[in-house]
Length: 140
Length: 140
Length: 140
Length: 140
Image (cartoon, rainbow over all chains, first blue to last red; front, side, top):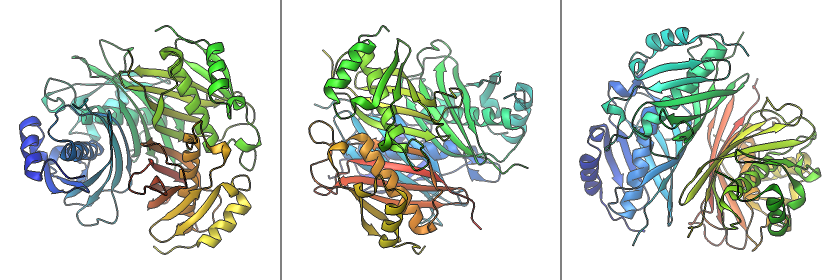
């Protein structure tokens, strides 16, 4: 399936529709296979000890899954998260936290995504895995 | 099982160990059956339209589950979220967002919690359900 | 919400449409609040030691959730499981294994259920918890 | 991480310790990266229309995850499923149903696996995805 929105398209969408969190996230790679985003962690994302918090990891997975769907569906503002399963496996190392999401299914009413979070320094030791389902609006 | 920490104990623990988010959450009820907490939503928790964001709901479920375990385990700072399954079912109504968590199992190595998020105005129409598992440190 | 199918209605539906597993499950209680079903465990459901297997517990949760939806939706054969999150917490005791499911949401396209599995002998020590989502066909 | 049990080792273990289901499953591939198993579907695994049932897909994911852990942990009979999240995405096509599982984490007390189920005929259109967590006994 070819992508309908490039990294630049998605970035513009993020900045316009998600003003409050737009500065927290960066697009690293947008292809037919995946979307990779990074969390630009600031104090509010960290727990004592400098570790990225669970809710910040959830937020990264959620936004990355959302834009993974949009990259293939086109600019539809109405996709809504209906469920998430997330496993936290390792403490994130200091440095950039990345998330790579794949679109497993783009159905009539539901889209299913799956991906992993990992530290820039140790891509082979995932920090977390997550699968998210989105309800998508009826299409033409 | 009787509780080992009261609402006052838990509140002190929250304010000391979770400085950055302590003002976001309030204890509503702490009993042998459950812990109920509320999200004091500010701008950073809201999406366009004034709805509480998914990551903020996750954060409320996570903190409520954590303190539900601590209320029965005692003041142990080392419980760590290992997994969460969450279903978002309805858009939160304006007003206070509450979470009621129960401890289903307190095992040797794992604690399992389950609960629901609901708007103050419509307690019978849950906004979300969540189950969370925590790894707990070996005890004496 | 009032129920549209009684235990007798559901039993007839089970026997007609799920011939292969109809003898494995019994209806214990069907109300507006919940559906409770029991697994009539035979050799094929047991693991060495006589414990009910994980897949058999999954099957009980799945069928109980399905009939919980049907009890409120009416006789629609087309609801399809889209996801399940299940936590196994304790080894089932010998004796009857029960599942109590609640319908948390009956939406336009999705139904969300949640419940617990427990041994007849220890209803307060759940063996497992499960939440299941079903895709439901468009209605009139 | 190198494997501690080959496909032959795992097959012998399956036949000895899981007598009742040993004939239902086949080992297709056992490497450092993954374990792939197939369901030899018989009548009891099928729903009306000849589709593999949800519980049978759960059983395949569960057994494949179990042997994926054992392949790297060695012959330990005591790993126990603690949780599973599974998304059913497409109807399985007739023919062989396969499951490919990866071990994402082998920790002190928990092992986390993730994988996909797919029909032999359409490996790029997964039928389901699943993540499973196992409690593993203390080692040496």
